Length: 352
Image (cartoon, rainbow, N blue to C red; front, side, top):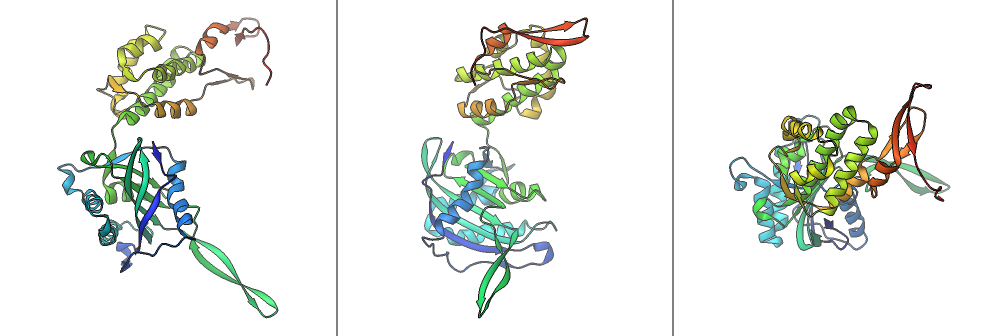
């Protein structure tokens, strides 16, 4: 988990990078941009808002041979070792970005390199490097008084409500390649920012493993439990899976299967599904890992617990008390109407 509430921008360097394949220029500023009280809060919101609104999927710098061959990793290390030298290193970073700007769809834009302090990640106070890029320009009107009338002047500028690309490199887990968050609002060349410029892989930690395993369970429920049982059992399986993760600090697969899968016939189906699909979720060889509570909370929020019927009726099951659905909801078949039905038991209706 990150906390950017008290983040402070210590320095700001602004450059412009063009599209190399179109022979557009690279412009490197000679000195850092002087921060001003009236613009700094606006820049903080511009830079940080996409990260507050985005799910925390972390990355780390990577290289097939050694991290020292990853240019961005070495630039980050140089800055963290000597923060006062960030402006000179920001020129190297922008030049490196320019060298990757060969795809004809890549847009030119401004590059902002910042040194950030007073940030917390996983309850650890750290410094960070922010690298952001604005690409899309927005039309806006300015008005000027001309004697007896107002004259409209059409101009173009950056929309401070939209950051096109950005990453925050935290001075944390250096040996693994630093912990990194990244955003990319424009998907015209997804490889340009993540692969070519940053050269990152997913950061494999308990947060990553918890999310991946729960996503695997969700697909197993849809692909196997639903066809074998029914929608109620699909929802209840995910209900039990989420609650198992919520009440345990460590995941142990055998214990999980025994507690979560009611139908013993589905246990070999689960294992076969993992053999076939596990690589897709990076869990093919995983049977134990620490559980990240924040990832469980995120998953609970996203997983639907509603049975939608073709008669325009919905049955919403409680994720907190799954035993209620098992005890008080029954499914059957009505011969006369030739329709399925759900029978729901209750003592009294609750007030809304």
